[in-house]
Length: 225
Image (cartoon, rainbow, N blue to C red):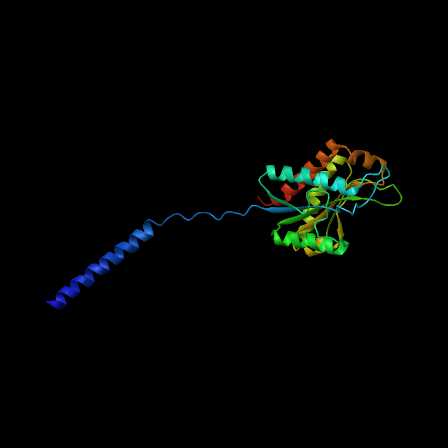
């Protein structure tokens, strides 16, 4: 009798097991697709505080141009649902005093790593002694193909604003080399060139530059889609 009961129980368990397997096979819960993390763009307006950067013939400070364009760029990217961090949002160096150039650059790179940057975009204004060179130049972290791709997209977008095509240039720049992600330095123009200077202090032109940089960044982030 006990053997018959055990046999029946074993049979019922086998049936229940098969039924369970059938239900699991036929009615699996849907798996949510992987969600791509929102890109994190770190904008680095160069110089700041007691470090003015280049100074134009009209007394224009590079640090102010960099910050103005950086703030405009951050607004445009945030409007496109991009997470943005800025190494500075006011006229002060990111690193604690006393100011030291190398330490400040390293601190900017440190911030980008702490914020888990997807890309790093430094904003600067150029200068050179002859007063002849003009137009935006995009530099990229030397040896980084991804940085070159980012620089190319931004450079192409800037060319549509300025009408001047300048090929991106590699550079071994401390802050670009230490961030560990695709990194560029956008030199938006020359404070040693009179036409560039007159444009760079114009708020409308600053907005056009910021829009072009944003367009290039979005082209890079959306590549392959």
